[in-house]
Amino acid sequence: MTSCENDLFVLSLLSMTRLTKADVVHVAKLAKLNLSDSEINKFLPQLSSIIDFIGQLNEVDVKNVEPTAQVTGLENVYRVDGLNSSNYLTQDEAISGTDKTYNGYFKVPAILEGRTDK
Amino acid sequence: MNLPLTIEETRKGLLDKKFSVVELVDEYLARIDRNKDLNIFLTVSKDLAYKKAKEADKLIRTGIGQGQYPLLGSVIAHKDLFLTKGVRTTAASKVLELFIPQYSATVVERDDKAGAIMIGKTNCDAWAHGASGENSDFGPTKNPWNKKFVPGGSSSGSAASVAAGLSLIATGTDTGGSIRNPANFCGVVGLKPTYGAVSRYGVIAMASSLDSIGCFGHTVPDVELMFNVTKGEDGYDATVKNSKTPKLKNSNLRVGIPKEYFTVGLDKEVEKSIMSSIEVFKKEGIEFVEVSLPNTKYAISVYYIVQPAEVSSNLGRYDGIRYGNGRRSFGAEAKRRIMLGTYVLSAGYYDAYYLKAQKVRSKLIADFDRVFERVDAIIAPVMPGAAFKLGEKVSDPLKMYLADIYTASANLAGIPGLAIPSGFNRLGLPLGFQLLGPRFSENTLFGLGKMYQQAVSYKPSLAIK
Image (tube, rainbow over all chains, first blue to last red; front, side, top):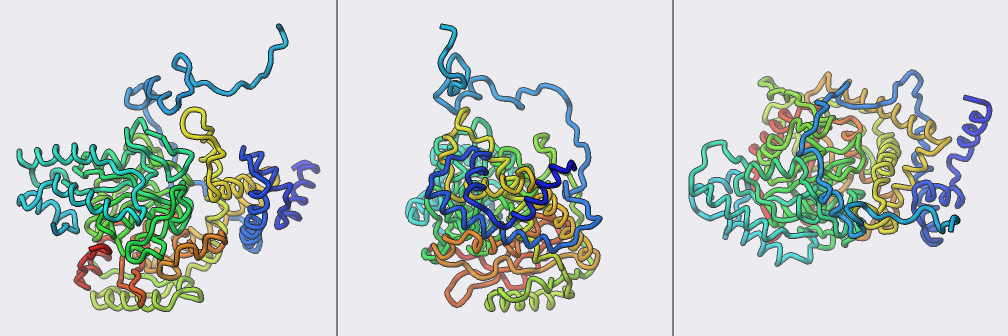
């Protein structure tokens, strides 16, 4: 951990149980959710009380405990690296979930706006 | 028509020509139509059901060998989280309001091949987020025993459908109790298999390290049969393991009573009912010992870190571009869990929450592993009380989350759980208990469950006449 990361970590521990409106707005942005003001005001106390509650894990000693990654003890599951027509959708099937298609492709909202070369 | 209440009765009635599959479908559809106010079905697949029924009747006329089509003519309802080719699948969310899958889940295909007749798709908490069935974007499911009460969740419609006789059997998913809880509130048998025993392929993902695919029926032999039809590798879900489920041993079994599950907060009537069930087992020669699962008190905290973290990741794919509506269409509970999960995984918090939770999870697992060195199974309550009233807990999400206290540990540890009805409380609402066992010990749980139902001469009854 660099000292900067370290500071950030300490800071996050200090602020762990104090969720602010800015935190909610930030998290919503990370999760690509557009929340209204009334939603933010509703979620803030609800999320705060849940985060306070899960903070109880602070009291558990986990020294020398490995985190769980998988519960049934599976290791390296392989499959044949080959094509099997029942494993994929046809192009028509793949685009059947939307009306917004063009020549067999998905139409997506423009990322770049306005051309500057004309 | 007197509806058959088990898979065996259905098969026998069909082979003895007491009724046809088409007549069964007629009857179930009529019952679905009469009970629309329970809001159990989101989609009824009438035409497909009749097509399959006619095919099944034709098969019966040409002759069916013993053991062929083990679910012959059994009318099944699938939780609307299971993809069904050509039949709308919504996850009870407005995001997928108009989604028609291009393929079916492994479990749907296997039930279909075994002769089951799909009648429709059942309501549930949207994306399986909930303990009451009230988080559906299409309105709450009602408990068929009393419409003022919740049926439990998240597989609300599936459990209610079996209890009300709108289908004989049903499928469900259990991520933190979502099969055992509604089975308990609706008075039917519900199985949450070992993690990785049944393929998740084609089942809309909630929390991938916890999701377990199971089923509902009136009796233990029925869920055992459905489990045997659906379990095992399919080549599409890498976590599925073809484990040899050990046969039920002949010597007397020993069952643990975890002291942490029988403390403050457990409803007296629930406790009394479990204690009398223990007496039933004792008369059958089962030995009971007190055991301790000391980290139980942390299960909810671990669960409400790991689960929302995985939820936020799994729901990241819904962008409204390739199929479905955009992210604005998520309901309040989905948004809450996406936010919570994104928060615990975000920079600076990952170690403090997610990593810490996965370490405490290891301690919870170690508790179970230690206890299962001494006992063959554990008996426990499913829910702290019987079904609660609609609307009672909706305004306080934390209170609703705490309802998972007795169920979530099994998902964190990946062990199987079997919920069994044990009577009714003074309000006429179902009571029950769950049996938990080591990974892949389903046969032991079935053995104990059948022993109990035989000992009490269990006769399934429908909530709706």
